[in-house]
Image (cartoon, rainbow, N blue to C red):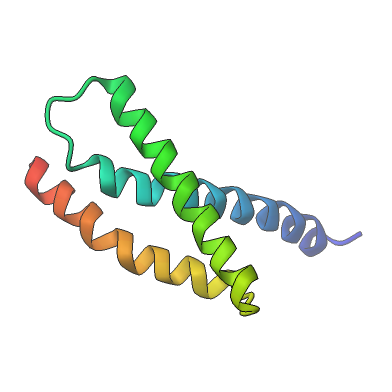
Length: 93
């Protein structure tokens, strides 16, 4: 077994974990940034709830339409989430 095979498997698992974490936390943090002076528990609840709901909704749309393209869904969720995350990062400063 070569080093490339070993690192390819590890990097593939790491990529999957990072992608999954973004899909669950990215859209949620974008929505939670609109909360002002909310307790941390509310922020985390909104973050996880919105992230899971958005991911499940995107998956359901892909299954129902027969257009199964997880990479495209990731790019769309990223394109929608990043402007809000950047806005919250700039306003927080």
